[in-house]
Amino acid sequence: MASNVNSRPEPAEEPGDGPVESALDTARRQLTRAAAGTDIDPNIVERLRHPTHVHRVTVPLKRDDGSVEVFTGYRAQHDSVRGPYKGGLRYHPGVTEEECIGLSMWMTWKCAVMDIPFGGAKGGLVVNPKRLSDSERERLTRRFAQELRDTVGPNSDIPAPDMGTDSQTMAWFMDAYSMQEGETQPGVVTGKPPVVGGSFGREEAPGRSVALVTREACDYYDFGLDGTTVAVQGFGSVGANAARLLDEWGATVVAVSDVNGAAYDPDGIETAAVPSHEEEPEAVTRYADDCISNEDLLTLDVDVLVPAAVGNALTGANADDVRASLVVEGANGPTTASADAILAERDVPVIPDILANAGGVTVSYFEWLQDINRRQWSLERVNDELEAGMLDAWNDVREEVEDRDVTWRDAAYVVALSRIGEAHRVRGLWP
Ligand code: NAD
Image (cartoon, rainbow, N blue to C red; front, side, top):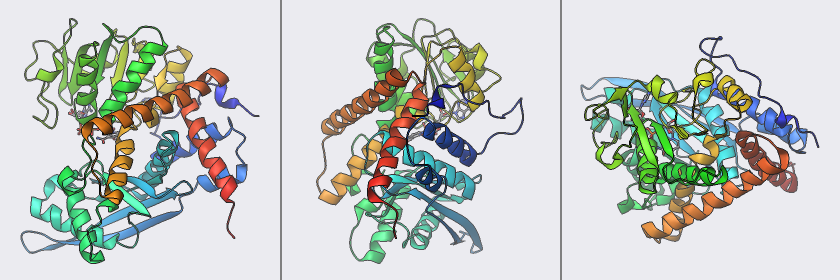
């Protein structure tokens, strides 16, 4: 069996050393790298380099002033060998077809590493939602749902919230889809409010999984959580939930940040008292006695660093200065390929996003199960099953790390790709 996953990742070009790699380039490079570490048929790998479908739609919106604006939307569906497509819908001016394809590939790997019976998708509208009123966002979402009606469905493709969309967006989407179907179909999207089929614990789930994986990783590296120092970049849905749980479980959270900067206290921050992005946007530094910059947070001398804000936070320019003993990725893609290579060389373990923040898609799967069974689970059951699923995935990835002596990222990709490759092999290629 070939195993060049052992080698140091190729440094990618990025700020400081050239142009940033696109999400699609990254996804394809990671696929090639992971495939080399498995005995998956190269013909299956070739299939996985391409999305199954990419839908492009135009969505007209009557603005509040009576004028009509037309927006472009996409839905990329990467692979459905293990089940229906699953992935977010984002509203952002930077949405592109290529980005949707790359992110849909990541969703395929994320579902497979968690052993969830879904494939990967991603979509969105090229729009700045902050420019729209609430009623404009509602009309736009309903029309987008109509344009995607033949593409999505509870058994075919199940969207979820992403950047610029939220539980209200999903409620409008579900309502518009259901109106045309003539029956309520809560399973067409996840991330809805619990009163219309959403799951308890969905919002906290990505942060909870980051905290669970951090706890397991600390245990694995023999420093336990008690008194372990943690710095968390980003105090939004992922970062705030992760930081507060780690604080509750005995860790000392010394820094948390938002886009304006970081609150810092070497004796530990009372994370419950710091307003999260949802509770009071960008207010982390407003109540802090001592503030440092986001760049300084990333290089604090702590046990664990959790980048949970944006992509490309750790780059070739700052990875050498990271002093944490362990990095747990809360955000999607916070570590560039060059940073990954530097951290690997320095023996700083990086627990990858497709494992660490996969609690979101896992509880989305629980939500879908609750919807199709018309039976809501208690928060306790959701959290128990999430913990069990995260521990299974953690152990599967840990075994690959130990057996192959590879990085956590490579091990996670090998786990995911092995499952997808085997599913393709036994199903075969039709006709
Ligand atoms: P959010 O909008 O709730 O919070 C983002 C936080 O990051 C805010 O505190 C914001 O002020 C801060 N921030 C923004 N830009 C920053 C910058 N340049 N430097 C430092 N801080 C900055 O977002 P979220 O839902 O917590 O998502 C964060 C990351 O996690 C994203 O990469 C997202 O794709 C990923 N993620 C989110 C979910 C989810 O369900 N929410 C699931 C998996 C992964």
